[in-house]
Amino acid sequence: MKKGVMRPGHVQIRVLDLDEALDHYRDLLGLIEVARENDRVFLKAWTEVDEYSVVLRQADTAGMDFMGFKVLDEGTLDNLRQALIDYGVAVQDIPAGDLPNCGRRVRFTAPTGHNFELFATKNQTGKWGIADRNPEAWPRDLKGMKATRFDHCLLYGDDIDGVLDLFVEVLGFDLAEQVIDPENNKVGIFLTCSMKEHDVAFIKHEEKDKFHHASFYLNTWEDVLRAADLISMHDAPLDIGPTRHGLTHGQTIYFFDPSGNRTEVFAGGDYFYPDQKVVTWEVEQLGKAIFYHDRQLNERFLSVLT
Amino acid sequence: MGFTLHIVHGDQLDSQAIAADLPLLHSLARTGHSPIKVGCKGGGCGVCKVRVVDGSYAAKPMSKAHINDNDKAEGIVLACRIIPTSNLTVVPMSTTTNE
Image (tube, rainbow over all chains, first blue to last red; front, side):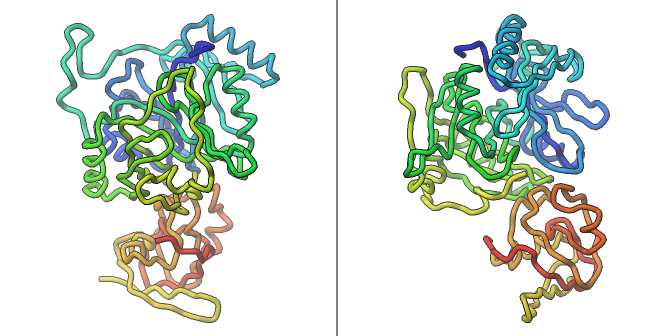
């Protein structure tokens, strides 16, 4: 949080059918539906204090519209807005209320073509289902996988050197892990603004603005196995898992929403402090880096994107 | 009740049974050896694109990034989003299989 960016605040995902998407995000993943507005539905994971973190938008293509990061306060937002302009990035000022109960947002397009935004203010409704004072351990009536928080996105795009420089120099992120090719070129970067091993990650890919997955945190490996059971019970398309990543060492499973957007739920994983060296995986070991147990690449994981 | 799928590979024609109540790709993926590439199974990624040259089907929404109105008119669809209502003859537009 060197420059005041706190955490992933929200992601807006395009879906082909809102009702089918709710069956995935609300009933299977276990997010809580908090509001609907025209062609959008707003949801949150139960441990999050802000009113919502996931926005589903009915559209005629799948993919990600934008990912938003919450910053410390409105002054920080002013500073970061100016820093983006000084760096040479065009910013779009989106007024308060464009997203319901959310303050003004500063949007920009990253060198990989993805839309990001910064905001400082969103209505805080507190953790869902438990009180602020003398809180119980967890709410009793959660659904499905009981996802605890929106954790990060993995995005595919062309200019990951450019996106690395922007996120580190302007937004104060650290590079926690990387994948390099034999010529030392970066082919994967895992960026953090917190103690998490990644808050956003990028893989080098010839097309701009591709969405690999949105990820949600579970507490334990047992919860990941339970998620796998629910994927079968729900007959949702499984991508891969349950397994462990070499990168970040998280315990994970991937599956698809009914519009083909990939979802991850994961547990564990390494932590990060700013004095740590970058963890490096060599691209020759990419199979093990991605699937620590199989140690083999899966073409679908690398090439199926929205 | 089911239908028969005929898949055109160059001048070769393979045939196999498919379910009447499932999207085409989901029938094929259940066998573990789909002759059509399996991706997201949700109409979003576009890897299971085929051209239907004979037969009828009901289609669910498909991403316009991969299937536009002209494609639809020419029978170019995503196999994960069409539910057969007759026997089908299709030409895969991506030949690699991964499942």
